[in-house]
Length: 527
Image (cartoon, rainbow, N blue to C red):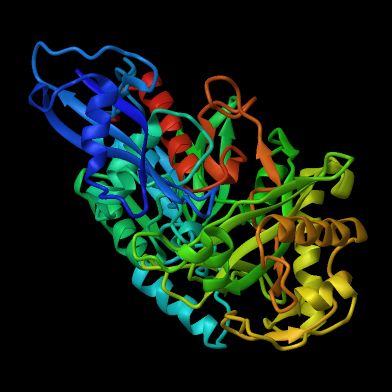
């Protein structure tokens, strides 16, 4: 029997080892009754800066014959192992094809490979080593490779991020995802940290390990193989064209990510059922990390037990429209994330140690059909237009920028302060109110003021704004039925961020597993 004991509080100055006995006392157990004790979850409670505590959830594996009373704060431990469904009876005619090797494609491909389906994974970008070279060359001022960049290539957009694995979904597959990341090289603390992250530097090697395991199990990953066309016959998938080659296929998983606009256009021509969906746009805001730590931890900022400070803030106006922070990267940098020429796109990235001078996060406002209409392609055009406007403001891949003080005061350009921008290609002073529609400008200003009241220093005059942040999630959803296949098209499986069914590494990975399970249920492995 394995149980979890919640809300074991240990003060910052207390011996953290006291958590074990406190958990035993709460569960009404003696140490000799427990075979193993382990930390299942840990978070920082900094609501009172004079009383900062760690909150632990402690796991206990009880000895044979011992049972714990499931009292308040004591519960059974959920099953960690993923139990795949029993394969269907009818073998596939051809191996399944997955378009995209981001988190959704990786986990879909891994489960299919483990079950003997030998998936063929098509990735438009390059393998990791070549992708990193292309991205680093772009960051240094070189040309943009439209097929291999921060958005496209081995590992998907998540490879050039913080590698955050936080999620709001309560799916039991989340634990399986964490365990697989650890299996392929991620740090052990993913199991217990409330806000687990891997870091860009570690994530690159982990993604390669995923690919090698899929290949070892009989799968195949082809790079430079953009999905260019889908052949339909009798209401179902009959083949695909990728990288100039025609391939037979009855099952195609669309794990294309949120930035494959050319692929969305191809899908639209096939008259698939698609809809525009809400997403968010705004800027990257940078602060000195030490100021964020002080705003969150007070005089305890810098204590060796405390992690780099993180925040997640949100506010709704009277009309219910949201402004919030997203993808916060402690000790990170703002990165050029364009995937199309003559556009500017920002994103955030940090390494495992999060040891940079600045913190950054997306400060974004929600947008929906009231902004861009009901047509999904109209949503994509609206998004791209913001990115083109940013290019026109600077005339290059340099990002338009302002300090928070100048933005709030309506003064174009920026007044240099303590916060030095980290955007690799460089920034240029601009008027960000010319970048966005007036409603979004007002929402961003509202957010700055509101969040400054809640987190001291957030709206400091020298906080640095770089724009635009536009790739928060896909503006498009490819409709699918309860069985997770595209409506009207048999054998087409919209999946992850690109399908419009995820919003981050964890939720995309989980959706990839769900789609793999449905394919396994429907078919036996190909002969």
